Image (cartoon, rainbow, N blue to C red):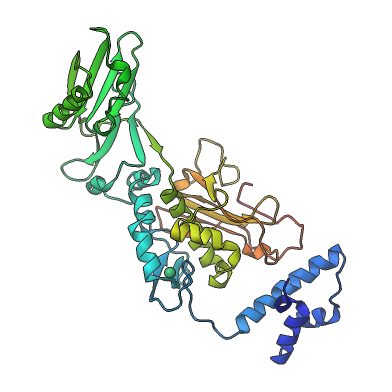
Length: 411
Ligand SMILES: [Zn+2]
């Protein structure tokens, strides 16, 4: 604790402002000698209350961007959860929108980069269509650089790449096969699928000297021109076309097909998820808290992509909600929780959009402030109704070392 935060200094500050409370008197009564463990617990709790008061009483500092710390840039509104994933409201006073704490420059930079990636090129982006947050008519906006959809129906096309288009009315998603080739050994029946962009001499090396009749080629693509292009590319890398089946790459409207989504979780996606957690904590615990230097590593990772000393966003095991069995979802809404880590020294968030993939976001491993259960929170964002509801019971300041009560979150 530095000299500014010493309780005796805090008390002096408060007395000079003509304020006395029971807490002040208690702190006055205690000497600044190292207390015993139980006393220390009490001591720090009260010190927290005091520093909170001091913060509120000090002259207002100029609004500061929580990402770049600029005070002179114009500010804008930043939704805690990108609007691409729904708009939400808890009550008239709390819509989880950050006001005057994120500058236009940062907001614009996020919108052009990491938010765009999360909204259009991630597993979560696909789920926007599933849960009605995006019209099928806009399916062409999806990107497939980080996401691959694969056909998971037994038969000759199993494992083929799929993309989403829409029907004529723009009301339904229609799976289509992008230009690709499937190479199937007749003996094993195993098919390797390659998108047009993946065809290379190296990728096709094992098929170059195939015995006549041992290999079958399935060429898929929306138009004859697409399929011709694939064929030419295969020939260009020295593999002759044999036993070819040329197939129009479109399924029937209303076809229900099982698809498997795989995502490459690169830094852009992980930073976008971290930003949701960071925004959330700024909403719940305030700008002064999130501007603490404890969180600079995460702040710089989100804002600039600065490589952290350890991974700050990782996949989380298990569900977030207490009692939710694996394979069964209590909700399709978004879940965010902010809490102490297992050592109770660091702070972490758990984030899951659509209660689908769960991520851990490390805020810091060793928080320099005072332990308080008031920092802990969790909310459910109902995608269907737009309502936000808390996941924790009302929290209070707990003594050091006492495990905080959690009613709805799984540890
Ligand atoms: Zn900024």
